[in-house]
Length: 305
Image (tube, rainbow, N blue to C red; front, side, top):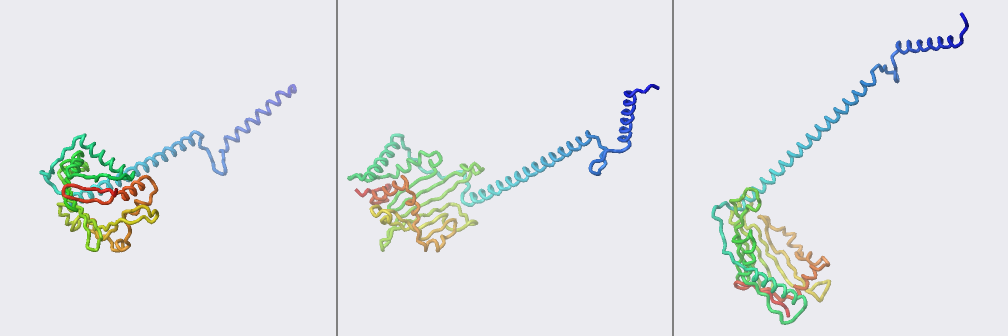
């Protein structure tokens, strides 16, 4: 045979290629000591299935969490409603014929006239004018204001007597929108001024309900006896300030702690802490008013000038 280098080279290359192929067929591929004869496509499917399982577990956790919080919310709402219902049942009465009070009609012109009278009095007092007329509120004017309220109209009435203000109410509970349409908060509240022999001036406030509410507590719903006096402002000696102190009281049958009473803290102190227009207005009115008198069927506010 004729010597052909190119043919010889081709034969050698083909033999080596065949030898390599035989070796690959005889031995599986090993990766870091682990025999890996799984095709690449199978690995991709396994990874996809793992992700699908993870998403499924996540959805289940979210669903369970939502169910738990929903049940907790329903429980809280039910407990709140039960508590409100219990209190409403104890403090109100059920009736088909609720008490209705006389309605005092007030026209728009009459309403504007009263507002104008109040504004004029306040402006004159704050400006320090002289010969200011007393500001008088008639009982009918107060009830006329009440008659302009859709909710209070016929459900609340104020009567004025010497040093005594009484408020009678029969308020429908359907305003709560919780199914209390046949129940009414019925009772009275009165405020009484008194000056004792030693010159100490007090205000007594008490609220009572027609409902017995014995399962909750005995006695009035609210009671407070307060001492009030006019003193000079320590920060500004040129101005006066109103002070009020709790002497005794109770709320929902619980007496006011004696420790708080003994501290003798001015309950109106917070009114004078802020440095704003509201505080300035309070100082101007206290310093510009000589006194307030409760007469039969009227309230009289007397200016100093």
